[in-house]
Length: 247
Image (cartoon, rainbow, N blue to C red):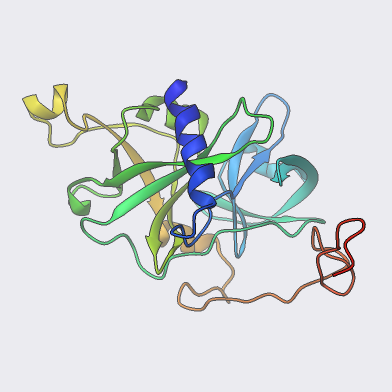
């Protein structure tokens, strides 16, 4: 637990430094179904969730976090594929992650976006990882940090995002499917000291079938402000001045 707290603090400090070109990914959305709470991911094409029985509901209660505060809403399922579902929130416009234009490169540093469950502000942090054996055995992540473990990440954060850092920002390259895999090419060294447990994830090719036909990983969409509904903005699209500030 101490390590996770330290990772969260480090991520918060990093976001304040000019050297960090993009904030820590904070795109997790809670599907707040009684007895079956789980995470989904806010993307530029909607909320992407692992498929499950709860996606058969007419409306799903969801919770997102804005500046450390929970914001409840409801979402409807627009599309489902073999592995995933695409949800559309009824009211809110979520902060979201962008899709990467390409799958992870061999040797590229990757990151798993998590949050502190026991933190009231739900602050995000990332866990370092890499594509095991450069993808020779499929979409498997080796976690570079000692804690949290693969088992705890798969159990607590199924549906979380896998990111690459390109051009100074985090972009989505996959989604954890909530399972743990045994190293397909084990050795005595890997069993005791190396990545004996691995995290499978759904890559861009598995995500694409659930997205709208108009979606394209190669096109960055820029959405116009809705000043009457964007959090923290007035109706002219400006941030309101603090009380007494005339500038």
